[in-house]
Image (cartoon, rainbow, N blue to C red; front, side, top):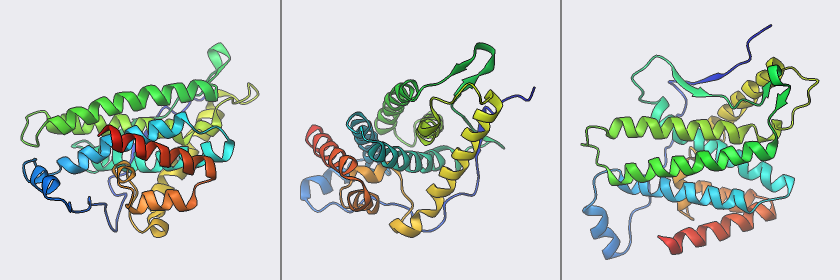
Length: 244
């Protein structure tokens, strides 16, 4: 019996074209605050808030079209964030992520969509904790690179789960190898989408952009999302902004 796929490698070459840079500050207080921070901190802060927005949106979408849009956008922006933090710079030959396990023939077990979404939320919470650590560290800290790689792997793994929400509840008539083959194929499709959607959005999407309502990704979300995903995003943006 063939062993089901378990791993997924990020490519060393993935994103080209324009990469997101936070908009410059306009107010004196924020300008002074940013000048006091280590280089790159603002992007890390936006990354942390973007994760909070994703979590809020996923808690408030129910209709199939809304869930499909929100999980896809979260998956592609999360995979790109994982590549920036891990795949682009990892000092290893394989930039390995873990495919979500949706089937096991030994126990006639299939992961449900509800169960997979529970794991997504747990993974997002862990990614948020790692993002907080990064915002509090400095690039000169001896463990900063390790923190960065750990975050990249975590958000990458969560994004693969998001990419495969639609494959939950696989029937027992499909064996585990076929289920995991479908998981791998869907992950490759979403990874390619994460690279090519820049042609539509105008920039490579990433989690940090969700914290900036004027970023290309945030504008794309508001223009393209079904009503439920649009409203959830607007509400999440407001709540995270007031909590900052």
